[in-house]
Length: 461
Ligand SMILES: [Zn+2]
Image (cartoon, rainbow, N blue to C red; front, side, top):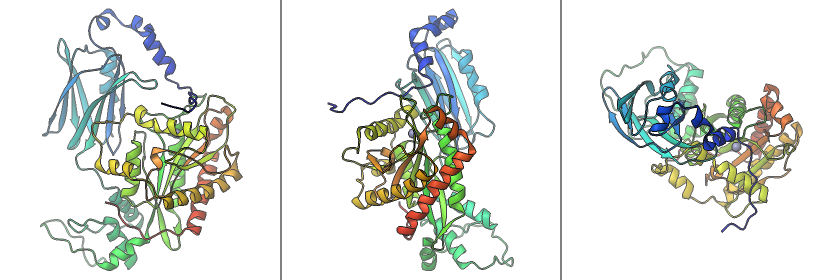
């Protein structure tokens, strides 16, 4: 029962192709054997990333599979029933890139007259997820392989590794069982003694029990302030697409990286700021995972970056949003939240497997304090944004954005401009305008921290 007026649809670049497929035009292009039996493969896509590599096989009917994980050497074997090997599926072999962190190569063959077998040779121990997605947006049926590393890198350790690289040192081992690598990093930084070359680095020749972190180390863990920057969409979810084909996911990642550069060379009250990007590549990250990742590193602010789109090309300007779990500040804000929240369906979430952490993050209700701080952060960003371009809305709007639901982190979503507006699309593509946007958001972060100094960092379990 929906009492609200319907939200307008935004144009999608794949809609035409999708209509073509549905209309049967594509079937005429297929040779007879493909029509005779089994599903037709529409496309294969590979999204390699350090977090996980996704392989998608899009087809006109759902694909039935069985799969088997072989541990040594690590492989994933998949049998797809009622399928004839065709050139589109064969393309998968060439689509695996040498620098894919998870897949070494894939082999494709017709195992029996009815069964196509795929064998993924993996670069490391992997926990694969294999699942089907029903048609959504411009996509038909998708069969998805998500190849997650069995031993994922700790994002805090990665922040430390980056920091240590800057300082030309290597991190100390974390205490067993009580890992707080960031704490030990900051402990070392806090000491600030020049590294003594007298002690050679210890080789792990025999297992030794590292000493627990000293209280001083824990105290000095407050020395770093992490800002989570969340580039919207990614991978199978391109986000909004401009009239010239500019994809929101590419623009917002570029702006996020420019913002990262600014943040990482800044300190607030003597505490160095560090950026945590919830997505640092072209792959899909579910909305709840973005929130969980930011909480896990103890981020003190969360800023999601997007580009707006509307059916009327005249719509223009930037806007900033905060969470409302009880109604939206306007019908337009509600529609925007609906559209952004659809990222999980378009990007493709495996609904059978939900991270417990993600579940928790989504179940917690945001506090009044979080919302107040989010509104303050939003206002602080609007001021410098208004100085560099038009504003679509002059005050912080509110709606139920899934990605803003961290109950303990002030969170805002910035719509930088309308990618559906031909002039703004052109601007969004330029380095100059992306720099200006990064400058403006960064100025907002600084003025927010001036009014609300960051707290001592604490790691969320
Ligand atoms: Zn978006």
